[in-house]
Amino acid sequence: MTYLVKIMGCGTSTGVPVLGCSCAVCQSTNPRNQRWRASIAVWGPNQVPIVIDTGPEFRLQALRAGISSLQHVIYSHLHADHCHGFDDLRGLYFNSQKQIECWLHPDLIQELKLRFHYAFEDTGYLGGRPNLKLCPLPANQGVTQIAGLEVETFLAPHGNTFTNVFRFGRFAYATDFKTLGDNIIRAWRGKVHTMVASGLRWRDHKTHSTIGETIDLFRKLDVERGIITHMNHEIDYDVETAKLPAGVELAYDGMEIVIPD
Image (cartoon, rainbow, N blue to C red; front, side, top):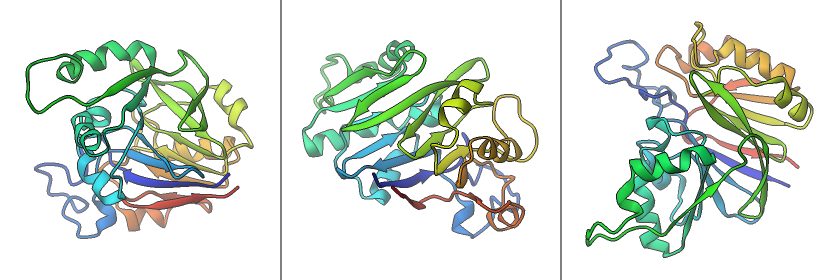
């Protein structure tokens, strides 16, 4: 089963350039050093898009990716850089008039409803509300049918909270985690051809996997093609690409990846 994956954004929570920063990467004219907040879109054989996370630039990301209709969104977690483009789902609903399923961990459903309460209650606003259905992912791990595809999910630690990581056939996506547990390594080893996973920077970080740690993860999983995402402004695309081992590369906004059968 062939999948197409588009990197909607590969930046960390601040995006790159960082507001007010005059470092070389933030001043760079290389488009691969300009990173919107982390998100991807996945198309399976049925050509129906599934988006993972709607960050603050989601409207622009969807326009660039050519997404004019969307019925399936998955949230890895509810940090602002992964969900605060939620309001842009209204425009996609108004265009298609089709219900949008939003999949997320069951413990986060109430928080999403509180954060964007106007989308779920009648406030009298004449602009209208989108037709949304909040759908629970497995509480710990499991396989869910979304848009006709089997999506396997696990939980991974992210500071004092957790994030969902995902596998679609031979493709895996994991962002905003510190480590992946042995249960995930056992379940995914040898099954993943291509993996997009976050690597914030080379220096250590308490709640995010670093580039070196993510490279080690790719090795543990026997990944043939590993792609680093969720990078901060310490990462110059050309400079850091030259340091990477074979089979590992940096993501860039707008990148398209074909996952072979």
